[in-house]
Image (cartoon, rainbow, N blue to C red; front, side, top):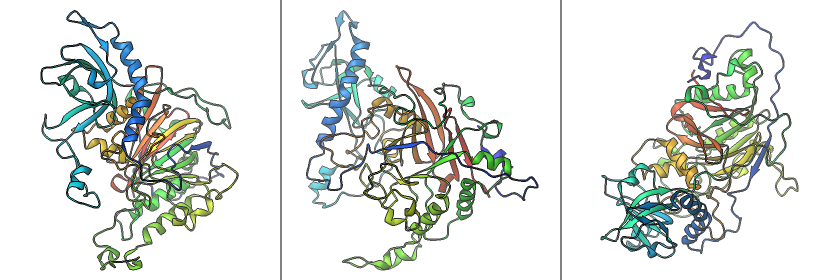
Length: 502
């Protein structure tokens, strides 16, 4: 894998160069955000959560049935032809059939709201476990729809990632125990993919669609390009803290790197082609046990100003304000940021950034143009340099990891795309707004780029769909833990990992 460490000889700190540096200009960012996950200001919470599952099943089931029908039509096993069953409860013992529905995972360690109610808890108990799975066979896999529920069994289930909320079709037969013996399983697969520049027009010529290559060829060496294309920088987990941090030097170097003030003139010329920065969650650190603001006794009633530490948000505001004169920023919230906890998280309010908010869009403006600081939702969807982009702060993938005994996070990202759902475990174990009229987590269109922030390590791959869809998957590592950011080439969607070292 090629990184930008080679440019800096493993260090971003260098002596001044004798070469004369010419003026550098940063290219314009072609950017069109979508309000796919925006919630109304006066959103109610009286409705039930079950409507989300009905809406999801209604939207995805036709596509699943289409795939299953094409694969299993006229399938004959043991002299019996497989037939379609419309409802789960219409399955009959000994009959070879197939049916579509919603997966429900019954797992012993999974938190239960019914248990909270039975114990007369006014708020749900905090989740203390890092995973929900136990020893093999400890969980039950159910398939349900509006008619009922049946338990799924069979060795074929071990070959797939399955979590609560994904929509699948299964072929098999019911056994004497009332369980459905699964012979084969199908997903909806990738949704239709829009063409590049489907929402906007390019400022210059367009590029060809990226082609799948081997993993070694996917990584691009930035210095080897004679005419570098635009770049998108993605970073997550900055975790500005109210106390002294061990990576304060790296944060300062990151700022100089993005501003083009580090390295030699040749590298600065390459870095000047970064046209947009995307910050994917957890810009604020968790309160430290040694933070004086958290050690004081809290007031029992009312607002206690002594327990609030404004320094983390001030440091983030200074960081953003230093970049915004030259680099537009898309800011996604994360679990530790000052935004609502439930999915989808709404944008961080501009009032948190007294200096940087100068660059936000004018409130209640007739113009739909986003500001240079675009505080967006989590998840977020938009078009950047013509490519459809879907990104999250990581909660959706982290929650799925609790269901599966595997470290293949890229495989789980691929599964979400093939399920056509970016947050299948919401609202079961991932707190979510109780949608009643729409289910925004369903992927109506296939993204070209899908990134997930705040991950333990970097990873990337390209997946392909049955209709020629191609999606670049990217795991964005937490900067506080790895000191790494990601650069995306906007002409080829090739990926470069950059490690910031002092």
